[in-house]
Image 1 (cartoon, one colour):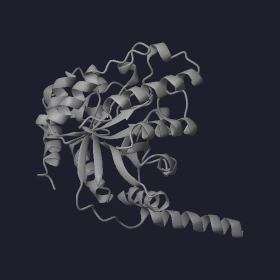
Image 2 (image 1 turned 90 degrees about the vertical axis):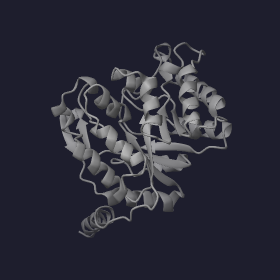
Image 3 (image 1 turned 30 degrees about the vertical axis):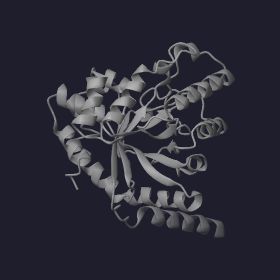
Image 4 (image 1 turned 30 degrees about the horizontal axis):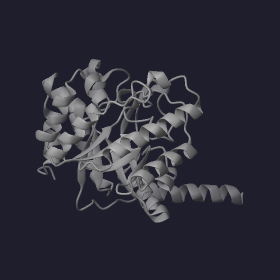
Length: 329
């Protein structure tokens, strides 16, 4: 009986800690945007035009760029840096800073972007190739003026995507390699914002980057799901990470794009509206502010541009612009 009472009391304490109360909004908030060449292409966009629009029209000064391994190293030991050079150089010209997300698992489906030539390698061989790729990327860009930080892998310990493993020990090797090659920039490790306490990510990275999604497509059950968590849920977990590990928490992906069960380009407005209406976009910004965290990279910039240029709906683009230029408080 005492054990049952203890368990019940523990659940009550945890519930009160994570769900009851409020957080104080940060005085100064940094807003950024995610960008993926692959995602721009999936939407039928010119990726250079889209990227320049982020820099020149939205005036985005903070970018989180996905480095997809299958595009970077299409042939073993042959790295194609031309596109990434272009992204980094344009950021420098416009006074923007870039967090490069590198590894086997980087943003956008299928999450693990493994080159065809590496698909049949053993785990040991594949891990060796990943470390060599990381070294090549870090050595090329560690002195680049536009580099803000590294993110090693994307939600590497969260079971999402078509990936061969979740390996804490190997992730530690990756982080330590990047830190040894570039002591001048922080290394971030990311985690799922809603379904994790972020402790393992905090054990490795200099900073923890988490996701913040409020409405998702739950493929296993073929249904949409709205998370019930309040802003305090994120604030208190960030507080724990700071107190226990001395690490800052930022939001690397703030949902600002629909989550649909198929290709976003081909989805109907009705399907998109189940997870992202214009009101949802605004509400997610307000929700983010209420967490008390101070850095957010919005997820979906390619889609805002697609909506503006292809679907003749510039409402999301204009709203994002008001956030980045500071006119939206």
